[in-house]
Each structure stands twice: as structure tokens, then as C-alpha cells.
Image (cartoon, rainbow, N blue to C red; front, side, top):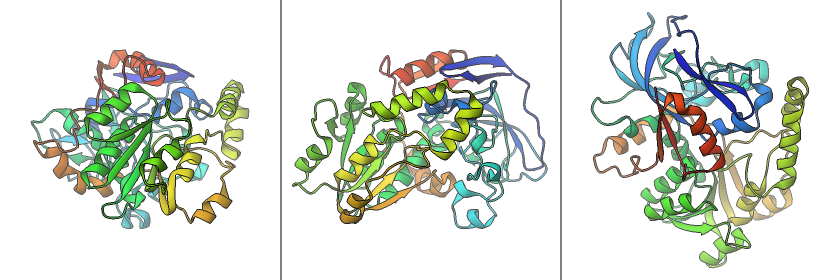
Length: 393
């Protein structure tokens, strides 16, 4: 089969690889019909190479049709149309019983002290072959895959794999009070959907970004925006819109590669030049994050407010302004999305013909799988108006 494989910094290729096969009675094989490039895939493309191996199959936002199931898989069968959550969870361990599926004890990658395994996402998360391919082996398929109706376009459902549950959790964790306000930093795919979900739930939403196409997409859906390029001081601009107080909550949908952190960017670049055997332990023990957005979030949130971090960070010794956080009484929540936890909230919205979250207005590029390298390049460089790239095997 064809699959998108990693070969180094900014080097992804579409290659022929062996077809996946059932290995465990809880496995399933899915024929992929749509799969997306995620913003966190760009961390693999740019920063996290020390935790990758040449030939790793990328991708964790797939959907398709069931080809084959193992003996213990009963809730899906060949021919069913399914979305595959990006985290691999068993559904019956202690953590899954708490609905903390991203911490599943059955698939935790204990070798690296990490949570549940993820599709297509580094040695730290199990080095499980990903979904940017023609076929995908799905472990723990007795629980993971989510059946979706036949008929509507894939774009109605493919974001249930990651974007929508991640965005829903970001808003849940923000604990915005009824009728309250929230600032969303970053208007990539997660930020766009986070802003829409927050507005759908009745909150005032102010979104911050510096890319014209992203700002325009948000405006199109009724979101107030602050252009980071035009604002001398973003937190001050938000306070100016909120009576000098700041918003009740802030969501960081950017993460480790925020713009405006030249020192950390240089450190990321230099670390990427080191041999993997040196760079990997250095990144695990120290980490190299660009913290400009997180610091702006701390400055922006009102006193006693909540910050929800959904952007990916990887640092172990990142400096935080603890005095400022303590003095303001800030609550901080974060973590990988517990995908299956939010499906019941989201399914009525994506099956509604009115499309209340406008899922049909997120993808800017729809490419054949063979053009994945171009998709990665334009997404990473923010070229050609790229906001969300879908691949079709």
C-alpha cells in the first residue's frame, strides 16, 4: 500500500510499504477514505525528529471503511463506516473507567513514561503506524473506532478523530462561566473549531492570530479577532475589549512553536542539528518550547480565571512566571484530548444538516495522498491560504 513516511526534518515521502494485518483479536483493518494533516504533525516535520525513525508512517486523523476485524471485535464489522480516534485506548482499565482515555493504562508507553499510545506519533507514544495511508491497523478496535452514518461527506465526520474532540475539551477545560468570555490564541484548525464551539455554547469569543486567512475565516463565523501583527501588546488589546479586566478564560491553541520567541526558535534549530542520540535525551530532560503565547495567556486571563492549554508542549524545565500566576489566582488545565469522552456531545452537531459548527468550512486543501509532501509544506509555511489539509488515498 501507499503511505506517508517520515525521513527527516521537512522530508516526508509517499512510499510503498507492506499492507497491515490483524495481529491481535482486538485489531481491525480500516481502508482509509479520508485522512488529515494535523498541526501537531508539523511538530514531527520540524522539531521532534529525534524521536522519529526513518520510514515511520505518519497521521492520526483517519476515517474509512472496515475491511477486517479480529475475533474480539464485536461493535463494528466489515463494511461499516468509522472514524478512528487518535489515541489508542482499551475502554476498560482504571483510567478508561474514569473516561481519561488519553491515559489508558493498557496502552501507556511506560518505557518513556508517557500516556496512551497514539497513531503515527513518535517513539514517545508507541511508534504505532499512522493513518496517512491506504490502510490502517487499529489496535484496541473493540473500543476505539466510532461508527458514523453512511451518506454524508467524509468532511462531516473526519474531524471526530481529533479536531472536534480536542476543541470541545479545550472549551470544557476553560470552565467559561455562563455568558462569560474567552480568548483563543491561535486560529489553526484547533483554534478555529475551539472558537466556533465556544461561540455555539453562548460565550463571547475573542481570537488572536497574525495570519490574514485565519483571521478572515474566524470573522466569517462571527468571531471577534485581534490581529497579532497590528497589536503592540496583545494582552493589553484584549483588556481594552473587556473593560480592562481580561477574559474569564483563555485557551492556548498554539503550543511549542509559537511565533515571537526567537531565542527558543534558535534553540529548537540547534537541537535539531544534533545527532538523535544526543538530541533526544536533551529534549526529554529539558525540552525546547517557545512560550510567548503561554505567557500572553497568563497576562490576558482575568484574575481568578482559567487557562486551558490544548496546544502541544514538550518541555521539562520550561520557566513559568509563577509569581504572576499565583498572584492572579490562575487555574491551569491541559492534556491530550480524551476523544471518546466527547463523541456523544459532538455527534448530534456533525449529523445536523444545518452544520452548526461549520465543519464543511474548515478544509482549505483537499489533495490526493500522493501530494502529501506538498500538503505538509504549504501547511507548515502557511502558504496558499492553507489552514486545514485533507488527504484522500
